[in-house]
Image (cartoon, rainbow, N blue to C red):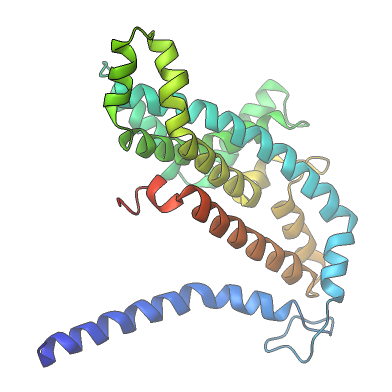
Length: 269
């Protein structure tokens, strides 16, 4: 290996490490400040204390908001799994007029800013008199997370050997039976992985939720925002650290059992 190649390799990995440090440093700071014993968020912390974790877990607004988040997360991610899987199956198996338009509509939430989506559903909810319930929040989250489920299921469909369906059809199975007995079991990891990604995105969604939630229906990120407007203690760091660590653990476990890298098309092996 030449000296020039060695230098390029060193520069490449230096850049990779620098990017990783840059991306993870804010999370490290948040976790570190959550252990600070004083009532001021300071880095590095002056000591070690779990008092703020206790407050984060027992604060009434956070408890109520977490329950709201679970309701919205469960409904939006489950509906997204059903709709996203159906859209992925339709796009993968059929060529029809308007297919490109449907695909563009499905991917548009990835491009449109979330505050625009939230403001739009705020106006829609006001027009339909839905601003006091969970319906408009679920609709907003459903729009935002469905593309990720569609992507996961589409990749799973791409990895399914079509000969299985052909063999079942040759043995007399109807298209409906082939779909539910062959296709769905084979793409189930993609559906579960898509549901999991949608659930995490819904649980942590803030920008759109800020527009469509009320005091009775505020989700956890909105409650955290309202808290930090009034207080500056490390409680917000503690609950942020809990979200970071729990989300990381869930994704690691899911990747181990479901193979999220393959489901999302990151790893084609």
